Image (tube, one colour):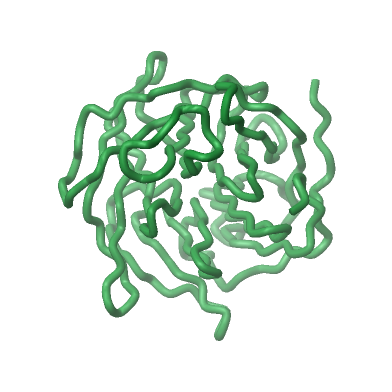
Length: 270
């Protein structure tokens, strides 16, 4: 059994007040931190006044993850039997709007479409050749299919919504059979966050390969103990050695938070 190492940082900084939100996915874009809230909103963090600014209101959607591909934000939407990835366009005032969207066909053994984790991985880190349009591939994990990460190659959207026929092109088998709540690709590695009520939350580091269609497990780390709990972590983003984490505690909204953890010793070092 793999050993869970202590969280690789000492400083945990609370970013703004998110007790009234439902923090889920996180992504960094040119130094800007975006947070997807699973009640259908996206927020942008402001360093100037330590607040979160609403940039998209799609109330009723279940946003679970957010990533960045081909200079566009992409949001993962959990929907029964019809999980989606939607592209977001930025308006002149900095707000966002949904444009194209793709329905992901459910792989075998996935019945509910309970997509929780999604991130973009550039094609130069993958063994699948040239991508159709986005210059890389979307890695997706479903709660009802533990120990697996599915890969999708999305075509150009051209402003169309609910584009069908998007089948997984590959399935990665991973060594940890827990529910994945988010993923991010940084430092040339894949970081997978696990949120399982029956186990302590943690994240694991995997490396991808150009020639092998397998992920190589490297290490796994525990998460910060805050307010007496290490659970309900649902979002992760990494820039260099700074880790950002999101928590969504449905039962105790005072625990809902986004944390910045600078100067960590997370593997791999840049």
